[in-house]
Each structure stands twice: as C-alpha cells, then as structure tokens.
Amino acid sequence: MSDAAKFSLSGKDVEFPVMSGSVGPDVVDIRKLYAQTDAFTYDPGFTSTASCQSKLTYIDGDEGVLLHRGYPIGELAEQSSFMEVAYLLLNGELPGSAELGTFSRTITRHTMVHEQLATFFRGFRRDAHPMAIMCGVVGALSAFYHDSTDIRDPEQRIIASHRLIAKMPTLAAMAYKYSVGQPFLYPDNSLSYTGNFLRMTFGVPAEPYEVNPAVEKAMDRIFILHADHEQNASTSTVRLAGSSGANPFACIAAGIACLWGPAHGGANEAALNMLREIGTPERIPEFIARAKDKNDPFRLMGFGHRVYKNYDPRATVMQKTVREVFDALKVNDPLFETALRLEELALNDDYFVEKKLFPNVDFYSGVILSAIGFPTSMFTVLFAIARTVGWVAQWNEMITDPDQKIGRPRQLYTGPTQRTYLPVEQR
Image (cartoon, rainbow, N blue to C red; front, top):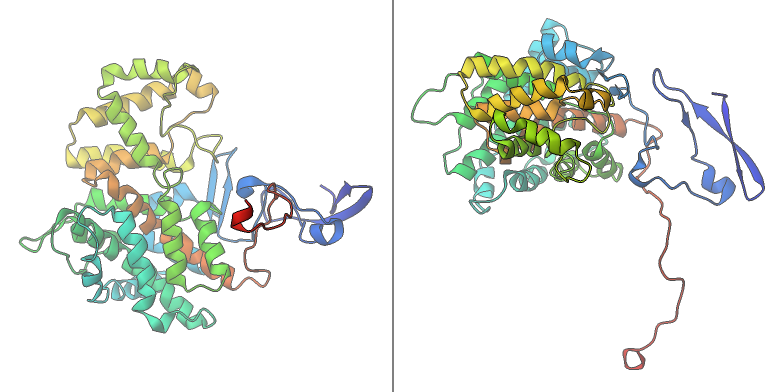
C-alpha cells in the first residue's frame, strides 16, 4: 500500500496518511476526514475501524494466530502461569523469578475485600444472577478504595490495577457462595491465585479443602486463554468508559456488564446447552444432519468463530485439557461422552472441514467448567476474572496514550428534519 490513501467526494480530492503496525493490516488515518470533506464514515460495529494503537494483543483470524506481547497463546498456556501472563500484559515483558515472586505476593496481599462488602452482598436477592451481583459489587469498589481512583497518579493506577486483579476471584467466589447459601471463605495466602479461587468457591469452613492439581492447572489455562482478546466488545467498553476519565473500578464494571451479553461472554454456556439438547452420542448424527440443513434453524454451538477463520489457537490447548480433567476427576457422564464424540465426528466431516467449522475455545471450556462443578450461571463470571487482566492492561495503555480522546462515535441521522412544536390542544 502507498503512503497515502486518495479519496474523492463531491468532486473534491483529498489524501489521508496510511499507518503501518509491527504486523497486520495497514490502516488509513481518517481523523481529518470530516474537517476536509464534511463527511463521516459509516461502520456499524466498528469492524473496519481501528479505535486505538495497542501493543498488547495481536490476532490473525485467517491464520489462527493469537499473540500476547508477541508470545503465541499456545506457548503461554502450556508453559506459563496466569500470574506470569498478567505481569506480561501489564508490563510488556515476561518476569524473572524475583519479579514474578514480588508480583504474585503483591496480588496475594490484595485478595481480601473490605468487610462491609459482605453486607453489600446481602442486599441482593438470593436468586440474583452472579453477573448481576458482579456488576454492582465491582462498581462499588470505588466507594471503598478512595486512595486508588485518581487516574492522573501513576502509583494509584498501579495499586488499582493490582486490587482489581486480586479481588476479582474473591468477589466471584462470594457471588457463587451467596447464590447457594453457603458462608463466604476468606482467602488463603498460602495458595496460588487459581488454587485460592477454587478453595473460596468450593471449600466450606467445616472441613479442609484440598486443591486438585489437575483442576488447578486446567483453571489456570482457562484464565490464560481468556486474559485478553484485542478490541472486543467488553474491552472497547472499558476503553470508552475510561476515555471519559471514569475511575478504574467503574470502567471494569462497565466491561463486566458488556461481557454479560449472550453474544459475547455466553458462548460456552450456549455450547453446553446444545450438548444437553443432543443428550447422548447416539443422537449426534441426527443433529449434524440438522446443522447441514439450511432450512433448519439448529446450529452447532461452539464451532467456528467470528474472528478465527481457521482453527481457534486456544482450542488446541483446551482439547488436551479436557482429557486431563476427565481423567483426574474420573468423569463418567453421557454429556461429556457426547462432547468428545461430537468433536471427533465434526473434525472428520468434509462439510465442517470445508467450512472451517472447527471446535472453538467455548466448546471445550464449557465442558471443562461443568466437569469441575461450576453451574452455567458462573461461566461468564469466570470469563470476567480472566479478562480483568486484559481490561486493566488495556485501560492503563489507554490512559498513557497521548492520542487518546474521549470516545464520541458519529451517526447517520435518519429521523425527522426540523419541525415546529405545536401546543397539545392543537395536535
């Protein structure tokens, strides 16, 4: 591509600079489009618009590539830990052993939440959805931690970032405990980030809780695989909220609210519900035939991806993790047998191969989380725990970006033109 893009409108010719990233498509800088042409672009969903510059995550959907700060997601999930990936996204480089130790201890020391938050939880109905609780409680953190809401202070931004990453598992576990009527458990500083979350979720005060290493490893991988995913809807929401100067707790609460949407964070729940609808391995051919029928509204959930036109690189790791968890927990359930059989048939069916409808990360993660014991209402909450790292890193990057402005998308107005107001008795 040339170093300028030529544009012609209403007989007026203008040029716009072309910007190149370190990898990926070039972008046309149209910031002066309105000033020079008195016109806007029209891009519903902003799917062809770069809203920012970022050094965090790169996706090539056609090639099935996902990089965090240049590192392939498969290598990070197989060899790293969630705390390492959190440090990487926040700081730009993988930590040394001393740096990782310091960072992990810092996060651990922030895992407790203000005691009055327990009272806040009790204001919700018992049958409240855990994501509804998370939206409210995370937003309320700014009412408890006034000393880390000044976004102009780099030190306060760091403290707020650490607090959000540390407290999210505690709040998520509390949301679960509240929904099932069990007492809250305080964090245990002797456990890992993921092990501590599992204990707070499934442990009870009456007896000790032993963290299953296979389950802990699987959850850590799930957290890594969901840590960041470029400028998706919830991340863009966090950036948009942050562009107004809102405090970080409010910004992350906005991200949680966006993630709650079924088109975003609910895909793994939809995949699991589909498996329940299929029921047993014997019925799979029937549903595969329905999926191929253009006149049948049934769709195989958890197959294919909006971004990845090839194999979802995160699914490769999850495929292996499914079997590790099943073996460790000695899972014997028709649902999981159905999942494994459906995966096998789809991967060897010409129809799915030609259309590149491969199992994605949501197909596997829902099955794993269900095997571990999480109800489907908690699936998006777990997504939020992992994605908080990406949201916080994106928020920090946005705050320090000299080009950042308050978000203000334009519109194509199609309503009435100016008209005269008539008093009610004349209408």
